[in-house]
Image 1 (cartoon, rainbow over the protein chains, first blue to last red):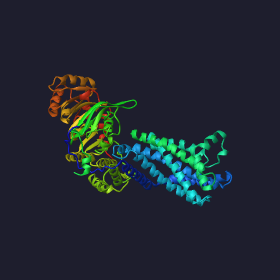
Image 2 (cartoon, each protein chain N blue to C red):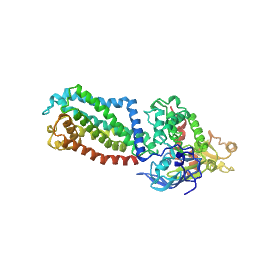
Image 3 (spheres, chains in turn orange, cyan):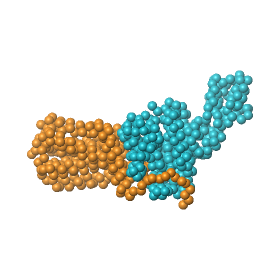
Image 4 (cartoon, each protein chain N blue to C red):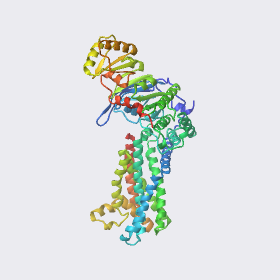
Length: 270
Length: 337
């Protein structure tokens, strides 16, 4: 090895362990992303207005025409609205990351001595915080339009936690998409065809048995339906354990596939 | 020396050493085997037109891209096998002003400070120091989306300095800056070097390389086609370019024949234009005009200027620098809004 012949400017870098650095860096990135929600309120407003419009539309316009056995439609509807909120919210992860690719910010991050996981962890964490806010808001709106929990507060809490887990899981799917397309408008356009069939060909808004047979096969087994049914069981009662386990299984499976893919894509994104 | 200083010790006698760097993208070969050596405490310029491979070289040296072949050490650490060590020792301001438009200037610098692993107590004061240094203190708490292009660029360079890196990479740092901001940035870069920083920058402007850099590598189509001090490069082609418009090709051809007989003049013709380069421009111009006038070939237009990147390319390669003419022409109007 060559001799040290250079003098370098006073150094003031702290060496941190990998775990400490990963947590600190992810929280720095998450804070940065949350500032954007505060400073550009339309980001939050638009992701909130849409589900509110859906609540009002389905509750007062379509609701009368949709009959669900055993419950009032509003009780059936609200878990579906929650899942729509978190899944559509996950599209924000794609748009946010694509914006950072385009602006060159990710390039800067990749030349910094920060944890490689921090950009994705921070982004998805910030979007989880956003989802907490939006889901709580939607719960309040649900109560205002007549939604009632049949089980109890723990059931509601469990349902909300499960929905937030599912939203977090979907954030990783859309993280991969956002990094891959690298342009916010394209990300938005590319995410919608992924989201729409998952949310609408599901048990979120209408009972699956009203759909054609071939679609029922998909609609009964896809993760949005499973999670909606699990959340519904948690707030309305019924066979809970099996559905919740299936939903958590879906989340674990999706995370195991998409989180490594997203990290891989981040490492080679320019 | 603090513990931190020890942890950033360097173990090389040169800031950057690259050997045979190669990189290919799907349909283009960006680098075909680039060798570079940047001495500590100097400014090294990669000079070339758009698409020459400058940015690819910077991305490899800053660990953003992996090379397909060759190797590079920055501060003595291999960019492929020890990227984390390299990242502790570099600052990068890329071509895009890579700052978060929704954050304020202060928030951007604090974010980068935290991610650069500054100790917590230094994050805020360092941001203040840089905002002052770059004349952004009045805009410190405004979101960056309200900044002008020049302010964004200054913030971008400030962000590259947050961790006081021993080696600074600047990819076209003055592109899009008005002349005043450009001069300010040049002054800042010189100050940094006076304090011991080593700088690698890319530029499309010979003038910039000439004013700033100790050494210049001219890059063309993924290869370094010439390397040396600015004086050495300029001595290859003369320090003044004289261009004469003769009105039509026939007169231009006759002028070239006539001027070829003059001592020291090596005229080149491009349609009705005749171009001469010289180390002694004023005297040559006088001789040329006398000779032409005596034969009734007085030019219709005359321009005398410093050589541009395109002239370097013509001298070195015999072809024009793709994109360079346009870039040079549009420069004054690129001044930031």
